[in-house]
Image (spheres, rainbow, N blue to C red):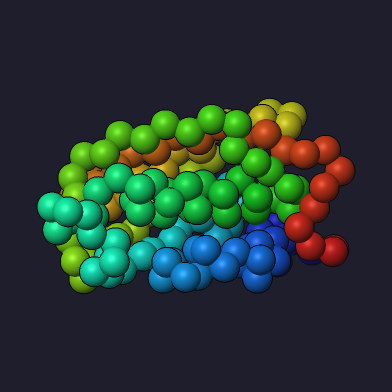
Length: 142
């Protein structure tokens, strides 16, 4: 099995168990070893009292892209630490895109950066996640 096939199979197994991501309207655009791109259209129920999408829903999109990227090697991986900087809000109806990219992977620990952008290309958020794999645990059968 190629690394790309392993990443796709791992994502399919994760997706099948991730009802929350699906309920929020997220979609996987692409998956590769150490990389994932996901989108989410901002719905009215994603808006806060200021009529913008800022904070939690953007974090969930970034965290989901991070999770799919760091689980792309068919190892069960969990977040060890996450930080996010919110730069601008999402607008109702806008398609947000989160691109997660592995920066470093050594042993059971990884570092991943996620950039969330709006349809106009502006940066909405910058996210960094530290991951830790659970030894001997896998998402799918190979």
